[in-house]
Length: 323
Image (cartoon, rainbow, N blue to C red; front, side, top):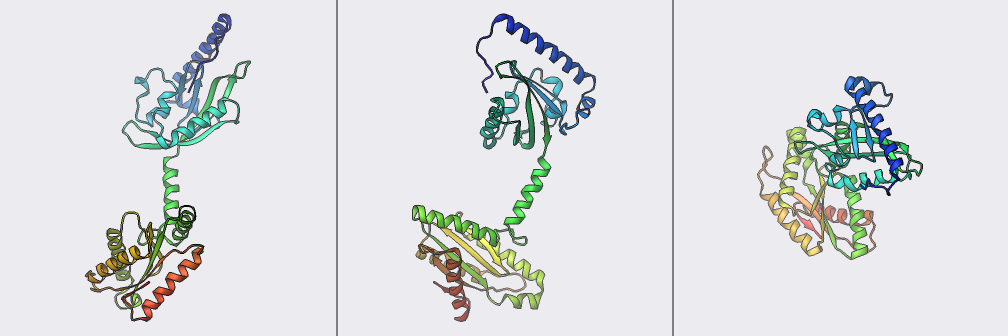
């Protein structure tokens, strides 16, 4: 970030630097006397303390906890500039954080407030919530001093990411759930409309799965589902997505694939499953329906079409594919 201003008159510059030196010295003494006490006296201090950025000098003062949390010894660091922290921002967060700061420095927002990932000395990233405001500007409105707080929010971010994961994945098999199937179908339909990119769907259902649960118990049934999913995940192409639709029903979404390619994939997978020996139940068969998405179909329409084909496969004696 550019910290240089237009050239000031010498007398004005000397006066400004003197003011900042006095302010710096007072703050240093407060921090040195009792770092934690200084932190706790501020009513909205973050769990990693406060920071001050002297914009003219590009000098940052902060509670020791901020750098200790990143694996650095504050006693060995000397003077720190703003770039010490910005250089450690996650590449995906850098532009957003810098744009947020620039907007506040220009007076366009009431505060600099952002969440970001920052690199620890050992190489991993931690999540910070950072909030600060310009507390002193010159007569032209240019920033002189910023004052802020910072929190380590890594644990809350992990919890948030876990909740998102649970909302998008099946709890037993850990593949995408029905909700994500509809979301991804919508994306592929948009892509089909814009770029005429084909995609296909395979719907498969385990034959007579109720007998597995009734005869061997639900633990064996659950283990069978997990093993089947692992087999499909190992067999499918990297770009294909597997979803648990409900119970023993699954969908494979096949991007960039026409009906012929989808039938070939389904046939190979059908044979692989039929040849596998499962613990306890030994043999497992599946019925399948296969369709290629047709122009102007809604999500409900394409799902009904492949579901109807699956039903025909069941009616035809199971362990077969209809397309």
